[in-house]
Image (tube, rainbow, N blue to C red; front, side, top):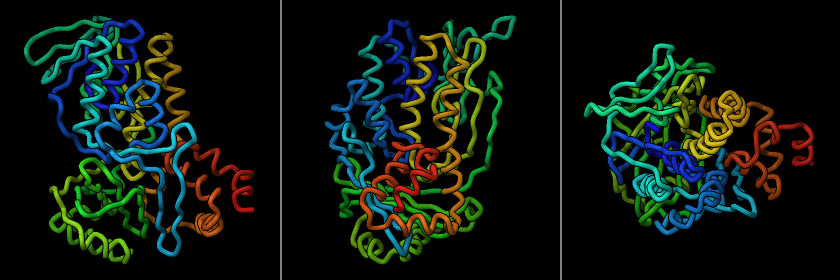
Length: 377
């Protein structure tokens, strides 16, 4: 396994628990931080429950989040994101979450090498991947080499994994941590050409992330805070709250390409962001990594990698397409306006809309005519 964060460590754990001899390598050492939107939606929390790791995440002090709100300006939709079995989201700091995942892999019997950079992917004469060579010259052979090493995956590049459904970066976002900005809700704010979100995290801090179209990257990169505060003025209540808060960290920014890659071939597979990536605006990255790891673990143990790609795409593609639409930052069309206005104030309908945004309900299920008719009746 090349990469030991939110996709690699869980996959290694699952395989080791099923009796596979597993080596997990990462160029970083742990605990260490990484750029992240932090939010772990209820489907990802359910995965932690299945793996027996939720208590460790809760013990970090990351607050449970049992309500999401989406402020569209004229109207706000507020509802419960989860299910009775998994009602909460969490937004743990990655410096804490990733170490918990890595320690679970070690406890399962995974061999771990931190600070290990993969210099070369090894192939046999028939083009099958057979192992890795590290920067220290060590060579490790394996039945399957998995790239869990993110968007710039060494494994994906070496095997020239074909990409499809590609789209260039749509937004650019910046986040920081703030004190004296209490909330128990995952707050999202949608405005034409702008968007931001707010969520509680560890140490009584609140994550604030905001952004704009990628085409405006150069225009605003030298005044991130000024641009964000100008954006916040479109929600006067929030602008007043954050004016009383204190920023406790520098701004961290990112923009990402959107793509799917063929995630398997002779002797290799891809998981997490190495296999597909989408704009950060729906904060699905950690949850996607967890669910992807489970799918690939089942495919490896069931000797069905082609089925892995089909199942992955069937689950992820609808959310991917929805994310692209949201990341366009365009004003809502007439159909969406009617939907939002129609469900506002109806708690059951607002909960259903919130479960769409949290990934509990698929877009196909939510936007089915019979479901919309029921919600709007």
